[in-house]
Image (tube, rainbow, N blue to C red):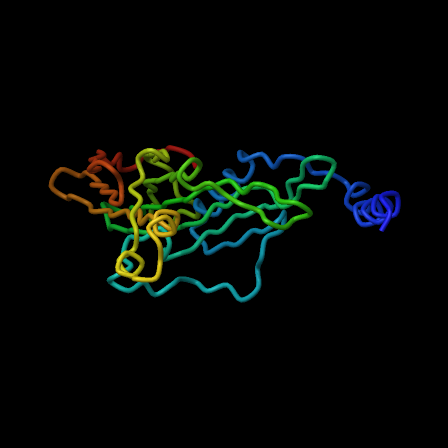
Length: 235
């Protein structure tokens, strides 16, 4: 096949993508606000590419003891994802952000409920014509952890404390079943490392403090926070 014919065929295939409106890079901040608004309302919520999904949503998940505290298996799930990002005149598509998590812990305090929320965030990089998208978890994955107070009769919760877990703090490991495999090479095993970040909340009534423990990190994480009962902090 002659070169001019090949070029014509390629241009014909690419024209719809070149002419399509380009959303450019998807900013993270508006998605953070959407996720946190769902958290304030205390509901199971799903949001994808600019639209809230409202059909067939469970009120809560039944979490096994083995999965307790896991960001990957929350009590009430919040999922906010937007993959409408484009680059290079629309040839690269599917870029954006994933924000997964939800309610992972709860404790009864004085006249209100304390809740622990966690949000796992990573960036999706655009791929050719929306295919071969990729992400870099060890470089980009972060966790936002929130201590939320929900007073009796209040329609919204309020943030008492927020922690941000950076990529360098996350402990990566090879799952046992992968590690024990005789057919998987060491290189592939290293490429399939995973993480398991979990959060736990305990209310200490004597000191009126919330104890927050986060596991799955490269360092111990246990913090105490004095709970301001009757606080008028706004969500």
